[in-house]
Length: 329
Image (cartoon, rainbow, N blue to C red):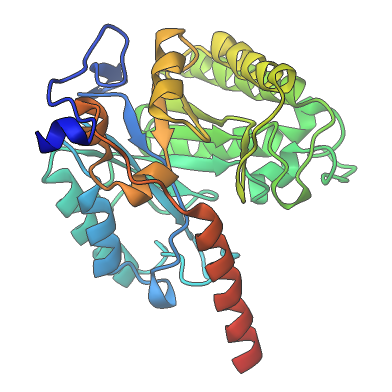
């Protein structure tokens, strides 16, 4: 009776091409297609992975599920936010190992997201995701609105994607293509990282990765692309024509990429199911819903109600917090 009043259906809702169907992701056997998106949590005091991170990732781990860590710093000068975890000291590596063991003991697949190349082969992660999105270092090379270089890394598309390709090549040589993933956001304008032709940029990256895979004779684990409706302050409710244009951009990148395709950015269960059913994505990464629902996979499987993330309140509190710190210190 209680379940009925809450609108819960205790039967598993697994249909063909649904979010809870299995997927073969390279060498990894996933039991469902619901991914924990990488999100900056700012919980690692002094850049040291700790019990708070272990609890956060453990709560969201499921057997056969894919989790991607928040952006991890590969050097003392790599960060742009306070209290982000690092992986550049032996102490940090050892701290990560405890978290990795906690996640993998539950049967989950765990990828570490790097902002650029770092030491990853000895930490126990299943693989790494190279962060080439959202206005950070690699994205600053990709976007023509902020890349004003006049050397071989600036100007035409083949120059602007060069740094990303070199980073991917270096990481592949270190740990193998089957453990490497890439994230891009050609249509996202974080930190004024704009591009005059997001589709052309996205296709240039995709074609570059396809060529790299062909040359290697091995595929990367996946390509992760952020849906254009996503913004730092929330999901933009765009007019129907703009929303369809965004969907078409993502669809063209997915059709062009020769490998597994992950999409994130403002997905609800229905939007995620639609993306998988229509072939727009192989896996769907959820962010804010995973924050407010650590048991999101179970809730989606049984069609249970979801706790709504109060992103507006979180954003206001974060601004107040940093404002107070600035005043005090």
